[in-house]
Image (tube, rainbow, N blue to C red; front, side):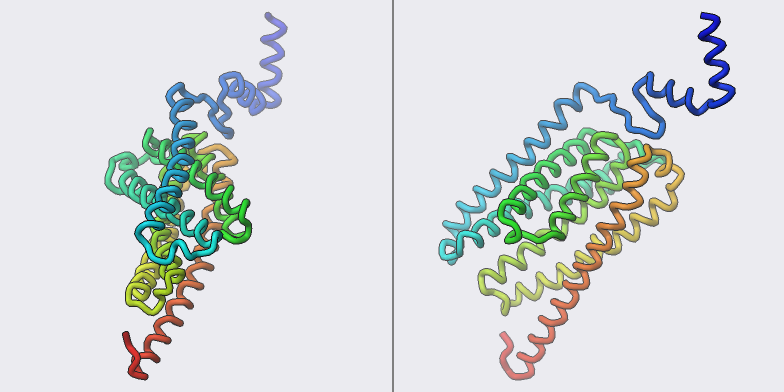
Amino acid sequence: MVQAQHAREAINAVAPSVVVDLDANATGVDRRGMDWNISTEERILWPASVLAGIFMSAAVYEITRKVSSHCFKGYDSLSSMKKVEWNNRGFSTFHALVAAVVSFYLVVISDLFQSDTIIDRKSWLSDAMFGVSIGYFLTDLVMILWYFPSLGGKEYLLHHGLSMYAICLALLSGKAHLYILMVLFTEATTPFVNLRWYLEVAGQKTQKLYLYNGLALFVGWLAARVILFIYFFTHMYFHFDQVKSIFTLGFVSLLTVPPALAVMNLFWFWKILKGMLKTLSKRRQHTENGKSD
């Protein structure tokens, strides 16, 4: 016992940081690592919500197929690949609406993050939403890979991969839920993207709805995927003392993943802007030629 005590004192004198790490590992918590102490409720909620996300995607896919076949002219005449994408965008839209509503509620309406300490704040609803989103992204990613590149190219693989990585990290660690919910809210623009595709496939590009949806997509993308990210990085800057206190992998991820997604959003925003300007230019030419709708 005496020798062990002397050995410990010697280690403390030479390398105290080693002893801190050893003590932390003995309790299962590394101050610069992730706390793997998962509660019984979380062991049930997490896989259940992931399965719910997968089931939701499959169910809405089938509902979209059946409703479209009965209610929309021209659906049955689409190619098999177009039908797959049509149905795929159905559950993509549904997930986007659910994610946007839940994220808005947790971040803006509820009092979950209305405190000085925000990095450790979480709730069962944020956990459940993350699990459902993981289930959705998994389902969509499998379909993208199966039909690659018909449902999306490499940029979609990168987007889904980064999204799943960030969500999984927040779910498992219980850290930075606020920031992941902010990013998840950007899915609010997805319904406009999908409606634009539906109108193109249905041959409705010359209709006013196509123009109005394009304008809504532009404004929504600017607000949810450009301005929101500016607020995101500003918020991180003013709460950087909390951000840098989380485990190393989470800290590095917060400094790398959101900027990567922001760059992708800016790239797509530029394409949306060019498309909108092109559409407005064509409509102006039609009006000048007396061919307005």
